[in-house]
Image (tube, rainbow, N blue to C red):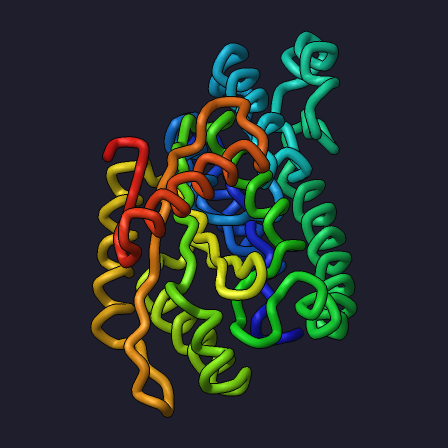
Length: 305
């Protein structure tokens, strides 16, 4: 088995017996289980971690079970995650129609559910492992499709997936996000004066500084030329403004090339608005970026300025 392969499950239950059974399953087929005893803890976990399958114990209550499933179905990252529902036979029959629209792949209703679950989870784990091996062989070609080969940032093709992921988290968890649009000041004159090799050095160094400053869940995108966007997850405009100013100062302090060039950048910062499409969001940031350039460059502008 590849060293970087793990099959992960989240169990939502209030029963210690269910948790103990999952612990036994984990030992027997090498699956990583995480536990949550209420809906909010489960949703909080899903905000931070990706999982392969959810085990939902319907004994937590009908209302909470349905509310949890509604959150999952509205989450771009987790809506396709398979779910195993644990219930006694009577409750399973009572709720089956109401739960039919959710991604429940199995109802387990007898006292030996743990044996059924172990076999099903092992099958799903092996299936994922086979896919994992295939996907590993495609990583380089996939990266060429969504990554900028010069800087290591995402390219325009990666933008839509990032945007969809973040907007789904707004809907599912009311989690805000913001973007920073930034542009290297006077970059054309760098290319014209020193040539494109030095221009490429500047772009690489510029990107490295940003990627070392942003968080793991944030994303840097090179839109083209010297224009970039940073997607900041779980960040309102105040957080984004502070982040942009930190990046601006560090670029001013550190940015250079083999020609010892001093480089600066201009910034436009906006927070996502409910139901806004990507083009509208980008246009708001772009307008602020050009205002920053018209105002003398090397500054951060937001709608709060």
